[in-house]
Image (cartoon, rainbow over all chains, first blue to last red):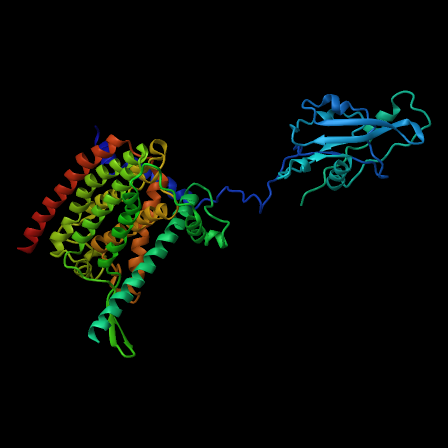
Length: 183
Length: 348
């Protein structure tokens, strides 16, 4: 054993080194996030609870096609489609139920929607003591959309015919509603 | 009248010491969690009160409310006795700890003048008394472990007994060097002999500075109070919680209080014996009251406890025993021999 190694052992060199490291960390800023008091900064594209959107004139975007129901991997969504009263060519979702307890937040429903009627929000604080509060109907989903996306897309004008796919391109051409800016 | 006056003095001093020690114990848990948190880039308790300052009160309240469970098959009498047997020696050890100089005379109606002094009693065998009590405290741990009727508790208690006996030797003998130099076992006399600057403290004093003994005392004290890295008796990964696995509520709190009170006690002894007690490091700093210097030095030691806990992992059991018998005891014996030789030539 060399002299320096022996001295290192006698004076607990390794332990002193470790003590120095912990002492240095005493003055470092803590990385704790005091969660309920300070909220985390969520990245763009964060998938929180799903919401239903409206057009700028307050009408629903959803056309009741139930593609979201088909796309959903865990049977969260149930859509019952119906014709709009007085406008037999227009369909809408008569009931739209969403079971948050089963949702895996994959966002496939949003991808599947042909008219961009769905969007994932950044809401995540949905813990509840009562499971029934997590079974959402259409009004609740629309309310979530209203409070998370105050900027609504413009409704395309009806051109008297639904021949071709002009309606879909017109809907898609509208800017996707911007996420409400969090302060 | 004379007797009543003395009674007032004794009860008053004991009351002051008890309240101070228990408050310190309560807030030592808070301080430990804070320091550990900071060292691990966390914050420690933050929720109860401003920066978690009321956390010890909340913890105490919680422990009062907890159900008091006595396991079936446990020896009820010894099971209830063990926490008390552990706590009482830790607390009455403070009887001989002097925390300052001088005296305070207060005229009381009907009783007359009473003179308070900064210690409960000045035993002429103070150090021996403290060491004896710390051995008695090991009985509480051992009996608590045995009476719980649980294998984890029993193993924890046995480990604790073996550890305390091994390190008690090193702890006691590391103080012998100072006893040779001071020529007294009374903590008050030892502290008074170190007046006038840090070069008179026994850790740095001629003829032979006891700095090695101080380090050895520190290591033995950590082992004696069952703190990391020597917390084999309560090693979570092996023994759940060691000797207090089966304890709950106030009985658990008693063991907890005893551990922290022991930490404060060994820190006080180290301060008095090696670091000059209440004396200032330089004579021109004498205007600062002695109690402040005393607390400052004790806090440095307590911080050392937390610091070591935050840094080092737990030792293996054979490492603990090897270190105790093959390193610590030869070193303290060598220290005694060298100190006595140096002191012999110094006195002639």
